Length: 422
Ligand SMILES: *Cc1c(COP(=O)(O)O)cnc(C)c1O
Image 1 (cartoon, rainbow, N blue to C red):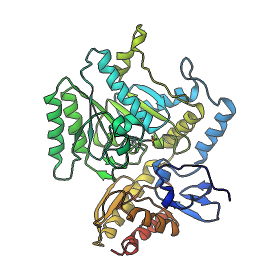
Image 2: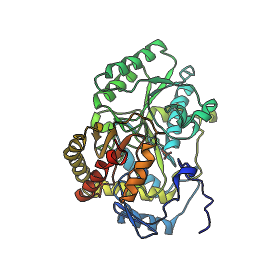
Image 3: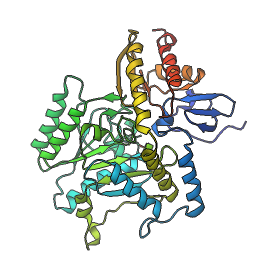
Image 4: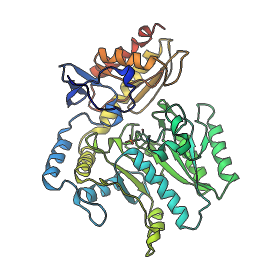
């Protein structure tokens, strides 16, 4: 075979070996060209919600491809985008009335930040330009999204390009007040300077599947409201049932000012994202003065086929017992995770909705530790796709996963300490 010219994402090619060639995806499984199959326990990087190749979404993609492939979205609209926008408004937390389309989670975050800054600018409050973020946050890999994410080995080389942000501590269990106090202090110390807070509600994904409670989320929202600070919920990972409810904010009873959604929006079929906002953000840009236009676009914004896939996904949510499947996975985690944690070589078991995570008790912490890649290879050899974040092993399955599949995933994880010789 000729060597491939492809440079893969988040891949150290000097260590990674050959990429696995996938031929077909079906339900919770990936079928490789070498005849093997893999249980996709991380939903192909958190995007595949119902399972690979959901028939209704596949049919919608096929039908739309026959009608309209792509059209410029400035000055034009189409049925898939209109249907989807109304569905998104119906399904999302209270108060969000406008939908802006782009094509990835990172761009949805960039759009949210620009909406917040544009809002203050157009209202003549240009001093409001500081963004508050949470320790260990991840919001994507474009420059702006990196700027509001945690700094570390991932972005050290790009540091000169990143803008300054204010960071509040992650709300460790029992120490939540520290986070809230830090937020309140930032807001009251510089009342005319803080533009927005951006947070991943309930679960910080790439930061290590770190979890905190709905009460903290509610309090952060309350503090933002009290200081007129824009509250941005990055639901790119937590949305579409991943955290147990359609959006994580909903189980906490929080209505964000701006909400970012991507990953599961098309059920994992096609790249698409949306940034939803309250009317006041749209209104602040609505003017006969062209300089107040919201100056943002992606070439493929609201691609008709991606919108048709996403609308089909919304229909799946309306017509199939998705919530029951999610509840079954959550119940399985609730039974099985404590048993895994009985092995003292594991620490810090945690779960939210369909996500379960646990840490290996090893000295060599952090993403660059050798443990992750070694375990990754071990899990693959045993037919399960899991991708540890440093010493954190997490399960984030498609919702079609069965109890036998979940048991297999837990079994292979339980062998991890032995593999590392702990
Ligand atoms: C994955 C992720 C992003 C970035 O999404 P992309 O589609 O990969 O650009 C942003 N925010 C969160 C919380 C994510 O998990």
